[in-house]
Image 1 (cartoon, rainbow, N blue to C red):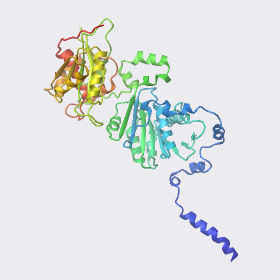
Image 2 (cartoon, rainbow, N blue to C red; image 1 turned 120 degrees about the vertical axis):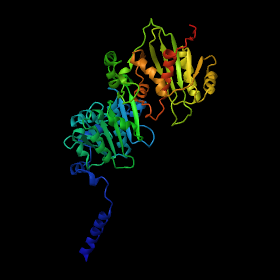
Image 3 (cartoon, one colour; image 1 turned 120 degrees about the horizontal axis):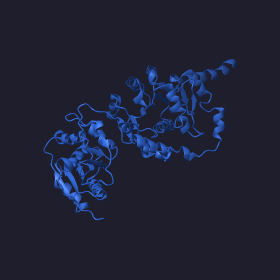
Image 4 (cartoon, rainbow, N blue to C red; image 1 turned 90 degrees about the horizontal axis):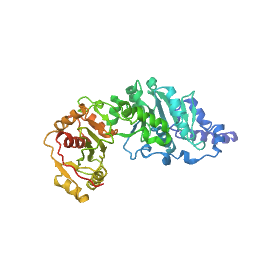
Length: 459
């Protein structure tokens, strides 16, 4: 009886243990990884020493260091964060910091790290100067990389596994709640890799992926951009000039600043020519008239939005000038989503800044109200209302001809404007091309149907 009494607690304890819920991580972890976590995860003896070493926390404060467009997009509706930017923009650091933030939140515990090759993942995404290991402070939650297992493990049990586009089939079977893809546009099997990952992102309440890449004209990139669940961030090399060699910046600007390759590799533009689009990328030239070549006229063209709200169209605002040689120069793209007072303020400021001769505005919708709003900000503004009596294609074709003749130059890369020009297909594109419309009105007034009314500005 005594022996039976001694056995009773043991039996009861065993029964309770069997009825306890299993940890959700256990069934999906490689046994070797599970053993590492059982022994204390990434907290090696060296890590414990580093934990005691002093460090400057400000060097790892990403919320302070990051530029605005390097921070996680706001809102809950997005699933894909597509970062297309020029070389040296800080794409890798942004991707690494995004993974760090996800892991620190405790909501992401099974992550896929996908690069073109295993070497790329290791040398850039993990061990690189802007990779995962570098962006964590030496104490606290710094992860540890197990190259033989192809995993990065954090002390809290989160695991990031290495995958490559060359072996995309290995994405069959595993499942994730988060992923980071680096340089997707250069993958040989980009579509296949993307398809496998999408089916593997099935854990957690909010599975997400961050993509960092230099843009290339792939159908896959275009499809991701058009996905309603995608947030797109774009940027140029020069946005990160504080962290780059000035000699390098000067060199790339001289060599590639006004070239097609520069638009893609420096300014992060997607240089795709859509079949049926009125403009082609190779028609766009960059330049500015010399000091001894003044503008004959400067106009500001406006295609106003009829409503104002988060989902309303943008107001197209383009500043352009023409020289005596009948060469036109696009000087500024000030377009955006504005209230009527905001776009009027934007226009009147540009009117003074560029010493414009006239504001040209489409009056099909809004009519006299547009002029009234402008004059409430600047009573002496020279205004001309234009009414669209022909379709967009008919109005745009003479302007496209000017580009084909080499008579139009852009002062710099106007990313959103140029994307709209080269992406708009008459009869197919649904979204209103507000910047394109404003450009057409500006160049029509300056070159196609010029009216030589100039304004004398006091010096």
